[in-house]
Length: 224
Image (cartoon, rainbow, N blue to C red; front, side):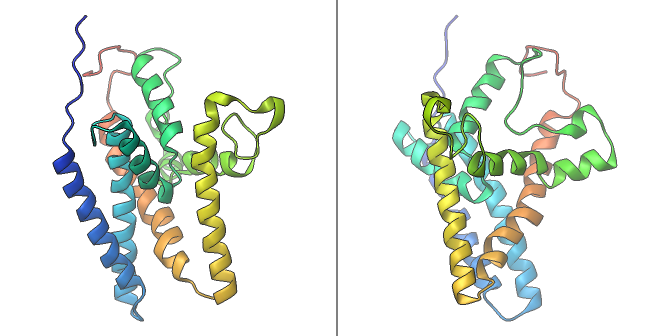
């Protein structure tokens, strides 16, 4: 079977990245203003861009953003960090998802209860990315193959790169926490945590849901 190499389109990707950074800058400026309407708009803009960053991370893990794998890796790690999306964990799970499509072992990185059990509770659970957040926080603070504090005989070399991703997240969270405590500022709350939790996660779910709902989950045909 002849395989077709993925097409790399660095120009459009860099343009998308520039738009994300521009709108993020606008959002950060808005949340820094002493205005409730500006705060609301800034949170919405930042959250939407964080969700879009995960979509761009997906392009990096397929190595279609840049010709350099190293560039895809570095940019992919940074894009996923604000949404606590590990580049290496996402890539591992996503590639397995492609290989095991239509089989009982198919377990996507972003999984949704709503697809299997449509209900209001499942919708809210998925809407705010509870499963993803629990998994990410567990990897940052608890034990597990990719857990940050995994050590000794429990440490799996195959998950070293993922632990680096979670270490960066832990560092970013620690810096934000220490800054907030020492200065009494709520900037990181308004500029990161609230947009990520209340806007970013729902927007990401609403982007992903149409791609998966109503699909033939038991089929090995990716177009079905």
